[in-house]
Image (cartoon, helix red, strand yellow):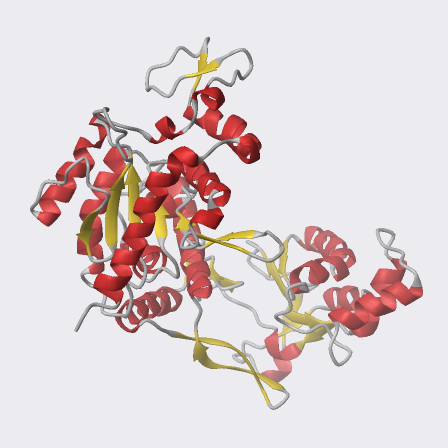
Length: 459
């Protein structure tokens, strides 16, 4: 069932609720900001918080009523649900409208429920009050809850169709709130990437929850996960809004981010220094999130073997896309040492040519490029930590010294993660990043090459 409440109810809540007890003028201003035409509008960013504030007292009373009646009560915004395993639905909560005929299936709120809701200052919307039987599809806030929590198949189908439309045309539509001539209606309108991302995340969260309950997830990606993965590759890489830098891991992100910020005036293609000296990056460094998106992309926590697999799969994944894209490069930055063999072998398989360790970059496929760390003169290999001066690398943390190798003695040494987050990040303004100049120059070279050869190729 749905309930409504007006401006006065919210105003009284700000005045009398013991958690607020605001001055009348303050309460009036807040209520005027939050309300429109003396009511709380749907879709406002503050609606969820306000709905919980104004419905708190109602929740407490309805929880008590539900316990007495043998029901479970739940609420999402203005959507109230009472569920029970009893053979007969409690009459305190609802009863059949017998005057409409024995087969009408019209139910009305029970007297106890109606009085409780009215007493709290709310009213029931009779047009949205109904009972869902055990033999029918039981939906609560868009979820099917008969045997387990699930997503309506129509919702899954629509989301899949939106992704398909997106990767083939570069746009999609969805039903959304449209403001026209002072009126609000639900119509088809152009969708935004973050909206579709939220819908995919919603479906994925439910699937992950169910698989954890049964612990029976089969290997590989499900059909829903493949759709989500397709969207992620399209939105993050194929149709990127700016150049994307994909490093071997989180620590490299810290290094490169602060190197760009430190040398921003030398590299206007990588960052903008505004009049107030605020620095805004013109590139995006892919973050390795602790979430399902990293799993679906196959990137995990990073590493050369992970990047090698991603490079190999990228060409195949984007071959299905027909939408406009590829406007900005995806730049793989990797250490130019023995650990890079898997990456170089993958590049060789795709390009049919052997990448040289001295190359500033290699064009792998479409908008993907690989940039190895530059090798200093007289050296045979390099890694990104080599670009820091010895002074900063000799920083002692908790009595330990920095070791950028893979096998370290934890009693004497700290590793790259500590160095990135406990040394580089807090001391960034004092660190000399000039050792990163050549690497940043090579990244800029990729951006310019891609613009000239791929985005705006010669006739």
